[in-house]
Length: 123
Image (tube, rainbow, N blue to C red; front, side):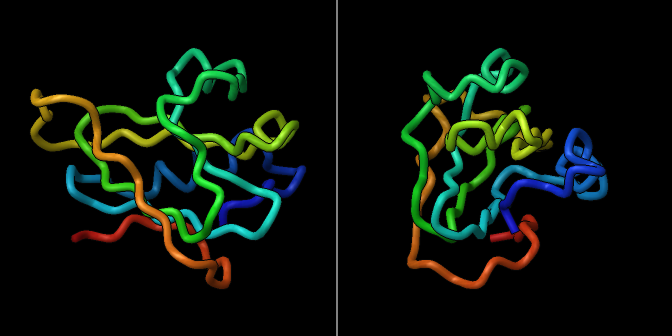
C-alpha cells in the first residue's frame, strides 16, 4: 500500500518497487492508503526536496487514487507533513507516445479499500 516505508529501506523502498515494473502510457497507477495519507503529483524539484507546497494538481485524499499515466517521468508524494522525508514518494518513468495536447489527465478517486501493494494496471 501507499504508506511510510519501513525505516530500514525508507530511501529506496518505492524506487526499488518502480524499477521492477514497466509503465506504459495509458496504464493506471493505483495508490491504496488509509486515513492520514494523500498522494499528489509534483515537479522533480518538489520531489527531490519533499516540498508539497506546489503540487501539479490537488492532493488526492480518498483511496484508492487512480492516476492514468502519460509518457514521461512523473513524481508523486504524500503531502502529510514528514511523510515524504520518511520515504513516502514515488517516481515513475512511463514509455509511449507523448501527449502534445495539454496537461496530463486529472486523477480520479474512489471510495476507500484495503491497502494492497500499489501496482500499475493496464486499461
